[in-house]
Image 1 (cartoon, helix red, strand yellow):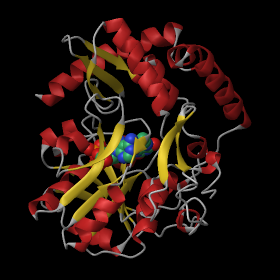
Image 2 (tube, helix red, strand yellow):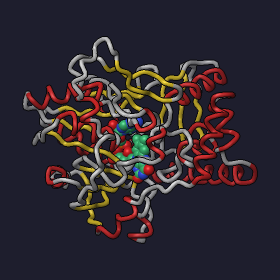
Image 3 (cartoon, protein in one colour):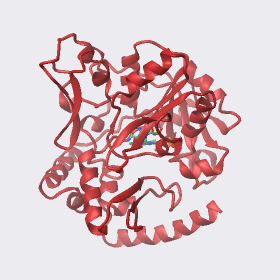
Length: 384
Ligand SMILES: Cc1cc2nc3c(=O)[nH]c(=O)nc-3n(C[C@H](O)[C@H](O)[C@H](O)COP(=O)(O)OP(=O)(O)OC[C@H]3O[C@@H](n4cnc5c(N)ncnc54)[C@H](O)[C@@H]3O)c2cc1C
């Protein structure tokens, strides 16, 4: 059974979950994850290929409403990637004894896997992890909970949200599916190699990883890694070989992410994003974090209604958010550069490729460093 060509696979996990013979598992293939079929178990039922969201024509979703929003609890905002809306949605579901599914780190921080709040705390699911994530068998677990009448919230990439919809095959009133504007998922292999490099440099095992520490404020991305020996690595994204290869160059992302078919086709109830146009649209400034909420379904609208006590909500017009649906429009030059980057990764590893093609260098690096010092000071004051 050929599920979808590998370069077209989103690795959303739908096929692994839907296979009635458990014949599909996700394996490592080069830099990226890929579903593999065990032919000795496959009965050619066609469910995997038939329901694969990448194999379907991507239909544009209708935008019902849009807001910019901030969680009223400041501490939660500082702990979140943007304005902490995911946490507010989760709190409502958890108060009703529901369950929340999201992406967290494995215990050794080397993998990003889907976990539920039945297994871990909400804070482990907070914040963006800029690494390919494994949905595992979470779609099956969600279906079980929904059938038992329990409320559930799922938050993942647009392809994972589409995969979950396809897997379930019917609407559930007790489920909120949330996705986000997604710039793509970087290779897990590069991430693991990068961590190994840091472990060698710091002579210690990684204890925790945070891709959105807000140490330099919301607007300056940084990575913070702590080690068992108590040491800490804190670097602005533009100066870090792994983070800059994703955030500023988009060179480390999966093949499909480079031309994501879900940019205009969100199958979720709600799409979250960083509201980067806050200043240009409102004339005000903010460095703590503001979310944008795009409502895609009636179910999503009901969920947002319930947020009013815990989140400040201001409406945005369709025109004000139109920019988010524009395709990334990558040039021929991008694909040539990506090939050179991947070749260098194969030869000398991610750190070398990131240093060669991605990190800010020379006087720009000095400027970034100095900007970091001043932003760090301001963020510290703001947090008080
Ligand atoms: C890989 C990635 C790329 C993104 N690209 C953009 C972008 O280009 N533009 C933009 O405006 N916003 C982007 N976002 C979304 C943004 O960073 C915030 O996640 C979003 O605004 C929600 O913020 P929050 O404070 O409400 O929630 P948070 O507390 O940040 O919650 C984030 C949720 O994201 C999920 N998540 C985190 N990492 C992963 C992962 N690797 N795989 C699947 N799910 C994950 C978690 O399950 C969690 O539920 C991206 C997020 C990710 C993970």
